[in-house]
Image 1 (cartoon, rainbow, N blue to C red):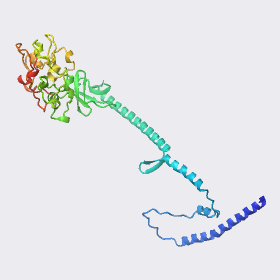
Image 2: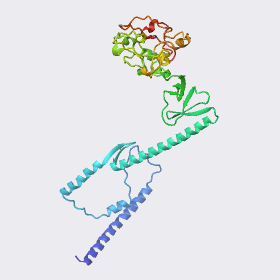
Image 3: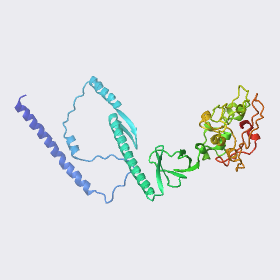
Length: 376
């Protein structure tokens, strides 16, 4: 076929197409006029279900003008070759449920998650900066009158009075307010949210004395004092080898010299018990009674403490009198005519504490109740 014949075939085909279009256009104009004539005077009611509507458009014309021939199909081997890549491509997609179930490519999902994470971090940094600025402005406003001061304790900031340091207010932008702390030779305990109150001059003042002396506290978690198991009093029956409760005992069975009193027989040079569990230590003649051990039953210094670890009332020993009627410590001197100890004495409880007053003076005022713990 030469070029002249090819041009003639193209011209004839174009003429056939134009003739086909001209035959269809009058019918479409008549249909449109008929549709306009029969228009409704009221709108159609809205359907509750989705509907699929085919609109007459230029796209339908182009499809109608398509050549009346079908592209021949390839072989079955080619179809199998085309299907395999499709199966492989489905592994690149993952499902994600946000507000709706979505099917998304892995690389797009990872990029989206990274962008979202970066946005969240920047937003959090912005909020933290704004909160820090606001907190600093409030602190400066509180300190403007001159009656308050800003102190830093263990890296955290507090506001307290210049002349009165009974209360500490936690104002640090970072960190969590501690339940208790020791600062400026004073112990503070969390009383309210962000407010700590002074409870004593000793680091042991924050611990519940009822819990330490009995192993349990009637107030439980509602007690505002600290319940520390390592601060429990040593069981006096265990020291004398007469406690049968073992692990069920509420008191401590750990031979820790920080809470074991000194052996009064050893101090007199008359302890012959090789299995004595009391502390054998020499004190100087003028050594005072350890206030921490006498009042709280615990001393951090242990055997290195220069004061005597005996459960005797420090007020009575120093001033000759005690103004606390509920004091359970021994008031008086132990006689030097004490027989040599060949067997540990029978243990008795070290006094009782009123559960309504966990942080105050404890117990009863009897010598008998403290017999196991008395030293000279």
